[in-house]
Length: 332
Ligand code: PEP
Ligand code: MN
Image 1: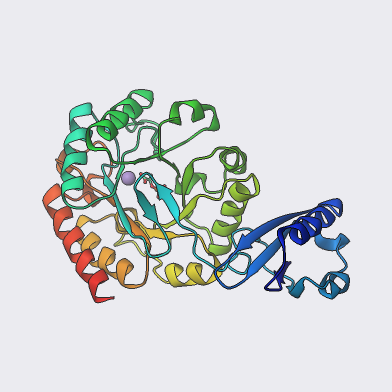
Image 2: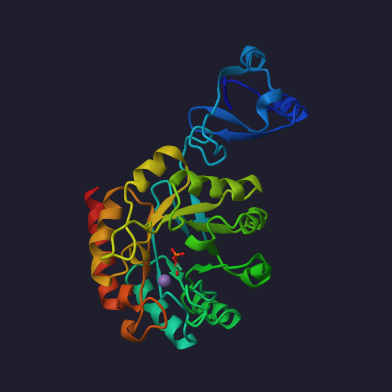
């Protein structure tokens, strides 16, 4: 349920309303928009008499939200959320490319790639230290050492870093990480999501391999209900019956999610297609349909990458993608 307030409501009246809502077991989330102030009611609203609320002289209108996601709902928060990352931002017209290798393999590798992608215009550096691999016999990532190398690359280039967490027990290792990624396989690891709700870091939440947009938004809701509203959603392809591509990139998720939620949406064409030659056209398409950013895998030697070489771009190929995406955005 959300209430739109009349134009000239004072802070004191708003505080009174908030106190009354809390006494009824409902948490008010106040959003001061450009044109109106909206109060979202989070929790069990069965104790709220909607007619009584509508009758208060400070209330313009009250609407029930039928969707199960509340804090993530655009009806609650009509303006786009802007996630700020150092001097960078994603959402609300701010577009960034997150680029880097699938996995951090050595200090030299991550520093070299960081310098190259930064020179081509990437705003954030990615690199996996804890890797979710389908086989336990595949490279599992350099783990804590990988995070150290990533932090070294951050130090050298000044780029904010994005890296995946696999377990809440690793959280203290992520203290200097700017954006914590929740990978597709952990999108519904609810205990992990609850923990991330209590940390004050930006979260990049990837859509699960076989999850609906509603399920993605409910996972965002888990994080938001703990108090952390700095979430970037990521469409990275879903599993269909198609086999020529690794996944099927659901670009319709971008405008659909923008309609449903105020959270920014980025697209990962690397995991979505699994093929480096498809990254350029899909990256341009993602920019054209309104994505707030891209996540792209770049490796200095894709043939010998320890993970996801087939979908990784060389720094030169990435440079072309960054230039063409910028052109698409100019046209828009
Ligand atoms: C990744 O970004 O390296 C990754 C494992 O992605 P996903 O969770 O989308 O498969
Ligand atoms: Mn990967």
